[in-house]
Image (cartoon, rainbow over all chains, first blue to last red; front, top):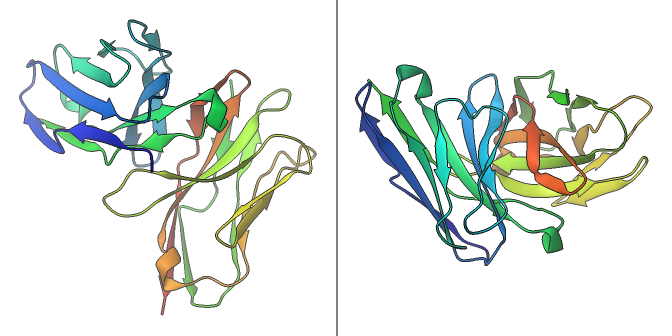
Amino acid sequence: EAAVTQSPRNKVAVTGGKVTLSCNQTNNHNNMYWYRQDTGHGLRLIHYSYGAGSTEKGDIPDGYKASRPSQENFSLILELATPSQTSVYFCASGDAQFNERLFFGHGTKLSVL
Amino acid sequence: GDSVTQTEGQVALSEEDFLTIHCNYSASGYPALFWYVQYPGEGPQFLFRASRDKEKGSSRGFEATYDKGTTSFHLRKASVQESDSAVYYCALGRGSALGRLHFGAGTQLIVIP
């Protein structure tokens, strides 16, 4: 079974601080994604990547950066965290050979105070 | 732009009831349509997808038929069980970027034993 692991599971940050959310996948999938989940909005795409060294903006990229240093790892970076970024963040991996069925991690609950 | 609408925020049923969760989409052409299910404390899990008009997707007793005429992809199950209690998301993806999904707001299904 495909595996996507996120860390940390929970994070409390202060306004203006830097936050890094990490994601590791053992599926050898080319594509990785960061979504945030908010009540009333479902999941919304922040950044995605087609492979090591590449990152692309999703639908709501403002205030976020992404980094894909290797096939397995994909990070989401909040340089200056704000309370509006309080949310649950999900990482996912997928590949064309699986018709882009996405495999999600368990999520990171981020609270920015 | 592309969008997905789920009209029911919450559905409460008794075991063995028939389930319908409505999903309508707004998009040009023929997007791929997906259903994902999310259990408490977990990330969303792929349920099934359909890519063409009149194509039926199905899994675990759930099914939905792609209807371009009514721009719908309603989720149905003949007889729900308590274990089906979860949040169900309808989503839309396109062409070579199927992992870049537009999700609906989600529908929480509560099945009362």
